[in-house]
Image (cartoon, rainbow, N blue to C red; front, top):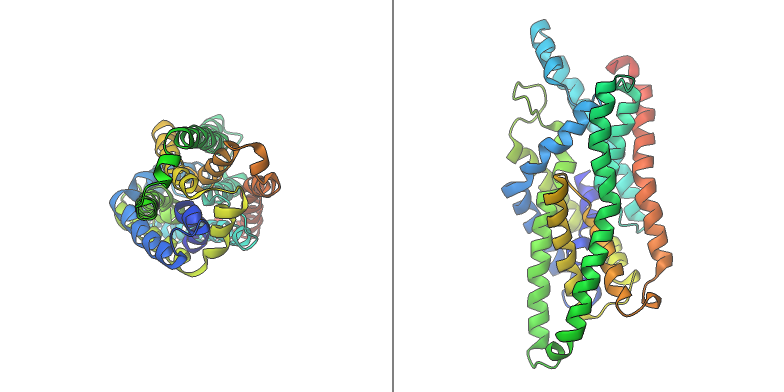
Length: 342
């Protein structure tokens, strides 16, 4: 799962920098890998519990009551094994979905795929006829789904405003400076490093949260939230270093033609949107959706003809299909394994 996420999300930090030839691809992936791990280690634990809450409601992670019952009956070891196997199935289905989409050059959301897989498992095992279960799950799910719309639209608006202001008041003066090349490269490196750190903070939970035991009773494999997030960050870094070029070039150059200055502003707009969405929604959001929205917003400043809506249409289809595919795959595996987990 982490490897697949890394292959897909590297573009969100340095896609525009590499596409506009300000930063070399090799330099970009090394910076991303290092900063993703640092971000995961320093603050990635913050989103672990948020993903776990949705997993608990969908019978992926054990509830406190289930843990207490397992302890009383002496079946805690069996519960731990089942929790680990559920997480393995869900992350495998979600990771496979992200990998397929990445191979097809779609910058999809790992967050969507994991959420879709969790819901797919819940449809197979959770009792949605219970009003309490339905109310809790709908509340969590509505938050995740709403970000799929608000996140790219917010990034589009923020990017449009920022690029418009930069083009009107700053870009011409900046380009005429003798030190322009050095300034723009430093800016790209700094913005990309910050965006990479944000990916580690935001996305590591999507890789390992389902292996985390929030009860502290040993009902799952990992009990240290920082370690859980760091493992996720390392897995993401491996994907960045090995198979990220395809999606990076799609995000960086195929959606809209951007100037070097535009590309830098897009990264800032994406990172700003992620920060705002996390503050407003208090859940992990999609960096892929944010950067695509920001690229489109930047392209619209010079006119709609500057945006390749054909590419965007394919990406939008992937946004809808990725949680659906992940959910269906997980549901089918859940049905096949029902005799063991039921």
